[in-house]
Length: 566
View 1 (cartoon, rainbow, N blue to C red):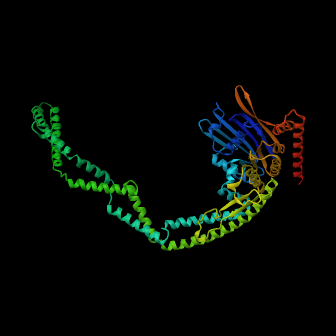
View 2: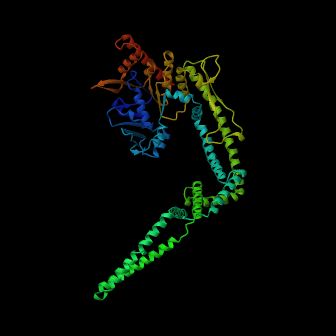
View 3: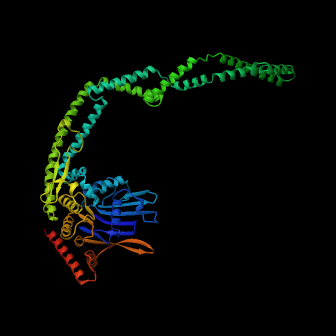
């Protein structure tokens, strides 16, 4: 159960510690006092999506710490022990959010993600607000509710179903890898054969594209190249060119070579330079005689276009094309020799389909049986809630034939909640006819009918909307009944429900230094009487109003004591 909630810098709450007890914890207060802020803070620490607008204006961060006693909650303890130390059966969740949108979460001091946190808190708290009305009205969620109601009996079948479906999916994937049925495999073989032939006929080579691009560039600039070669040749061996100049310089130095070794050395160096330039000149001559054929350019363009086409089809690079070729050859070889394997896997698949369909039928039969019991319980609870003429049933669609079903890991059932609030009215889909006041009572009936609670704390956020008078008293008694087996936190405006509380918490606002602040105060007996007086609309100084509040409190205590005796 939830032992305490510490809130810091959340909306209008600067700092607050709320201690909860077993049984029924009631939060009351004026409209707009900040009761919803406490639910928002609880949702936040349980792993809901963080919203930095919840941070108190002017502050850089907010934090919520929740302490749970999980000694009687084996599911929560098992989930928590996977990531944190829970030796003392205490779970402390600390979550912070900063103004920049970042935050952190710790469970018993161990850092966790929001997803990890939600796996634990799913076993701790179930919050039921007016928004859950919409949850109950969605057909997709109605099957989940029935499954939760019969979870113990259903779990064995569902575990087996998930295991068989996992194997079925594996076999299906293997068959898909083998090309599926004979016709699909033949189509795939034709595609692979074409692709392999297309790549192999191209006879691609590594680095070929770079070489072709360089050759194309050269061909496209041949006029410029010829001009450069001719100009360079003239400069080297034309009239007054470099060779003539070098020859003159060499002749001059040789005339003084006998006067020192340094002149002879310079002559050797000039002679080497002359030889190198003569070689360059001859190479330029060879280059000028190269055949720049227009047909070669056309062939290069065609080849580059082919390479581009193959790259676009098979991976974006020549290396990827080669890899695709090898992969295609391997798949082609596998499919060519897959007939025997395919036959064997198809037999396995058909066997698993028989197993799955049999499980679907067993699960459906159990769901239908439990749904009938559940609907009877709901009708009984609705009668106690002042809806004695209400009828409720759960209609299942017929299961598809084995040949028509789509195999999955949840079953084939499709159902719809059918409801009639008044005598003489036909049953119709719940979502289309139920009113606001009726849905509040219907949800309470559902929660009371679902006797096997899977969490240790229920939170009811103003689900008493649309009810008053005698029905409010009945609803209060329902809260008290639920609170005997599970901790209940409820926000309410109804005095009948507030009177039934085991722990009363008043939420109120004050204005301090020009700013509004929300506070939480645990009420003693006298303070509780005053709050009940306010809720019934009486003057707290009126003896009659005070006496009325005391009588409500006395009757509530007597009812709860009788519950303990029974």
